[in-house]
Structures are given as C-alpha cells and as structure tokens.
Amino acid sequence: MNRVPYGQELPLEAPHLVVASTSSRLAVSTVQADFSVRFYGDYVNDIERGVHYVREKLGTTLDACQAAGISVASLGVVLSVNFTDQDGQTSAVEHLRQVHLKNEIDSETVQDVQVRVAVRLREVYFLNISLSNYEVRMLERPLVPGMATAIRSWEGRVTESGLQMLIDINNVLEARKGQGAAEVSGVALSSVTTTLNAVATNFGPRYAETGVLEVADIADVSRAANS
Picture 1 (spheres, rainbow, N blue to C red):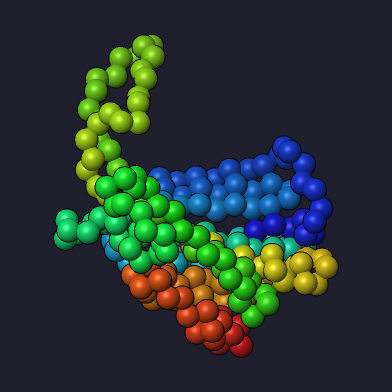
Picture 2: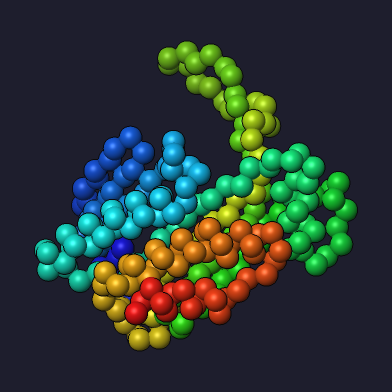
C-alpha cells in the first residue's frame, strides 16, 4: 500500500519500521507499507484461507493508517501459486509450449517458457497473470563457518518441478485515469482480495490449463465485491 500520489517520485531511502514473525513481515515507512508472507502447513493447499489471512493483515494495516490520519493512495497484491507436476507425463515446459505458444518449436530444445498477460478490470484495476515453469533443487553439502561456499545453478538434485502462476492485481489504472491517486478504502481492499481469490482458485488455473481467460467474468466478480 502506497500513500504517495501517483506519479510522484519516491525517495530512494526512507526511515522504516519492520515487524516480522516466522513467515510474515510488515515494513512501514513514511511513504508505504509492505506486507509479505510465505505460507506453510495447512495454508499451502488452501488458497482461500491464505488470501483471507492476507486480507485481515492488510485490513489491520489500512485501519492503522486511517486512524493516524494517513490517506492510502494505492493498493496492490501479488500472489505466487505453484502447481507441482504430478503425473510425470507432461512437464510444465511442454504444457506451456503446447497450450500457450503459437510457434512450432521442437520440444526437445525448449528449456523454459514464460507467458504473461495484463488486462484491465472495470477500468479500475490492472490484473497481470504470469505463467512459467519452475524447479526446486536440493543441495547437500557441509557448511564450514568462515569458509566461502560457491553454489552453482546446475548443482544438486531436482526434488520438485511444475508450473508457477504469479498473479498481480493493483489499482494503478484508477490512479492513471483520474490523473491522481484515489483513496483506498476497506471496500476496495475487499474487492481486490476477493478478485485475487477468484483468479487464484478458478480463473487462473483454467487459463493455465486451456489458455482461455474470462476477463468479463473476472470483472463481474470484482464488481460484485465492490458493491
């Protein structure tokens, strides 16, 4: 969340306060507030529960800003979701190549694929969805204190691979069209997080699987949450 009017240059550094727990972190300064969290346990397989957690934390932060007389100018939420390869038949790279690419490329020569689409919702929000393949490598090496260790990208064994979906929704479009920053309210926060949840659980996975993105239906979800 950003309290600086759209278009105004931000200082490179600003005094800030950081509050952190095991997996979450809140950084607050005179120009913005950033909240980040990495989910584990039951939250890993429950996107709706995770989005609700983020909504509660951002809502508390927004309430604190309003109580201090601070007008919040912009809002953006980014969510990363991983779909692990399960059947072992079609890799994430091959799936993205077949469904999302128009060029005929030999599958044996393709290493990575990245696809990104950005759409406008109700002329208020930008919605960005990025798809790419990912892999997790496990490196088992003894670490000696005081000794420099070089880790190379090809080392280790692959323990997990699949498709990563990155969802980014923000109200920058609203600020652009209004030639200035719109004040973020609790209703706007609810609209953003509700839309994010719908994209992460329904529209996004469908787009990843078929290449079809129902922008009008997503806009309807955003509009209903905003009413």
